Image (cartoon, rainbow, N blue to C red):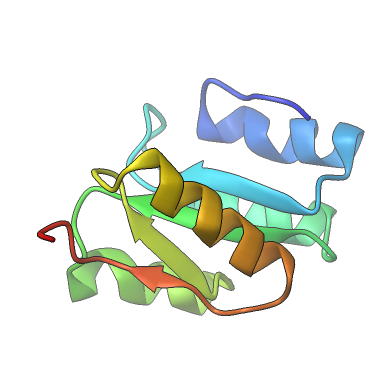
Length: 102
């Protein structure tokens, strides 16, 4: 397990730790978190990436999907739902959790 404070460090941590799943906040402190997503997938192709987004709009999600992610969750979902999403992504499922009302 590892942690990167910025997107630019995510690929380095992923390459060093070879995780099954990476949680990547799409609008983190780095200006180009999409580059971080591409770098993680490029350096560790077997790793599945669960993108955490601030908003589920096409301007946010389409570039992430084009970059290679298949799953995303909204950043305001509860911890149990995030844990279930991680387990789903780990087992190869596509996970989409955007509804925060409920």
